[in-house]
Picture 1 (cartoon, rainbow, N blue to C red):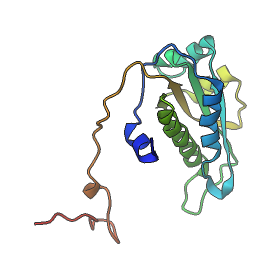
Picture 2 (tube, rainbow, N blue to C red):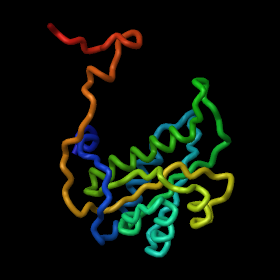
Picture 3 (spheres, rainbow, N blue to C red):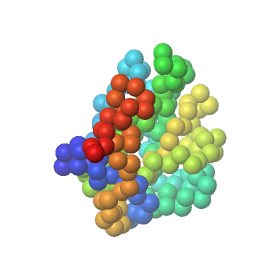
Picture 4 (cartoon, rainbow, N blue to C red):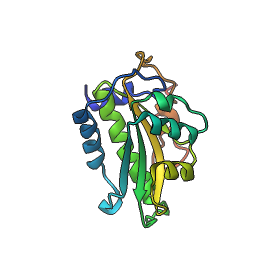
Length: 179
C-alpha cells in the first residue's frame, strides 16, 4: 500500500475485534510518530499507551460516553510537553505537531490492517487524573487503535478540489469551470 492509498482507505473506526496488537506493530506506529516533523524540531509529543481493560473503561467515562473505547485494544493519550511556543503565524505549535504525529500513526495503522479513531470529545482533567499525567502536560487527543470488526466502505464524502483550492488570492478558484 502506498501513502495515497492509505490516505484514501483511512476511516474513523468505532468497532474493534477482540484481538491484541503485537508489540512490534505498536512500536512501528510510534516510530512513524517519532519521524513526524515539528516546529523548530521541538518534538513536544508524548504518548501514553493504554491496554488494560480496567483503564480503558475508566477512560471511557472521561469521553462523554464513547464506549467503543473499552472495545479498542489500545487507547493512546496523545500529549504534549510544551512551553506553549507560538509560531510567527500566531498559532501554538504543540497541537499542530501532535496532530501531525497522530496522522503518521493513523496512516501506518491502515497499512498494518489496523483502524484508528481520533477522539477529541474528552475531559482533559479526568484523563490526566486516570492516567496520572502531570498538570504541566497537555492531552491533545485520544486515539483508539485496533483491528476493525468489519471492512469499512472506502467511499467518503469530500468537497471537490475546485471548492477548496484558490490561485494567487482568496476567491480565485484554482480549477475554473470550463464552459
